[in-house]
Image (cartoon, rainbow, N blue to C red):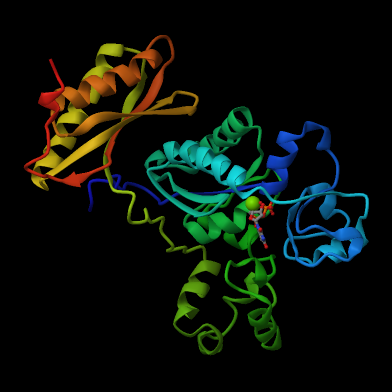
Length: 366
Ligand code: TTP
Ligand code: MG
């Protein structure tokens, strides 16, 4: 177990968050007069002569049959009155970064998978009801902070969570507990399983498999012919066993600790004591591995599951508990009055191995 792994008790619970018509939604947000109109982001249609493809389009444009990767000339023929816009990648990246920062704050472990999609391991919540409450809170947060809508799926692993997030787009929130897989997932076509494309679907159909529910009824050898080593995993999935775990990708080096209070807490003294305890543990971790850290991030989750994170970088890398705790206190202080708090977390990042020639924080402190 690494210092970033949360303690595992109870079931694994994973959220998949996918923004709705992402590029188009950002454009509509930037031009509110486009709300409700068919909006297509992609190559210039040049009145039907354009080359290139559709990046994405609003759900209003989807009603005309337009979709991602379609030739832009075809999209133009389907709806010449749509608003056609060129993509603005730097804008979408900037918005994506802010979204991912919000989402990361909600996760025990976090894995971004594309510009508008991420998995959040929230197993520390310990039950699906709380995970559903958190999913609703995330949707509210993204709407109020970024004015953007997303769909969230909740499941026992990444694959089922992703299938769930796709089931009620746009604006969906679908929770699939392992025992609900037969009822909710078995009726779906096999192509809803991420990674099963058209070719595999044809091979499956030739063997009488068209829905996910057909999979457990099929001889494992037939599944092996199509999926090779992945056959058991696919069959397990249809039984509600989803082993795909959220993995923090390398490069996001940090150590963190979180504490969920037995009862929601509004005592600033107790919260600051908890932060001190976590700072001491994290400094111990830094010492053990001969590391220093520079960025201090605190996370506070309130009783209604709304969550804030605040970060500050110190003038240089350190493992001085006083410097870390003072920073954490400063960051947390504005949030300690009035509202009940469910969880506090402390993360240290921008981590590096000790360089004996480097200045220490003591050089900066009075
Ligand atoms: P998606 O999440 O696949 O699509 P989306 O967010 O537009 O719509 P949905 O509500 O169905 O999730 O992709 C995210 C963004 O990636 C999308 O807004 C534009 C870009 N993209 C492309 O540029 N080309 C493509 O073929 C696809 C699929 C996406
Ligand atoms: Mg999307």
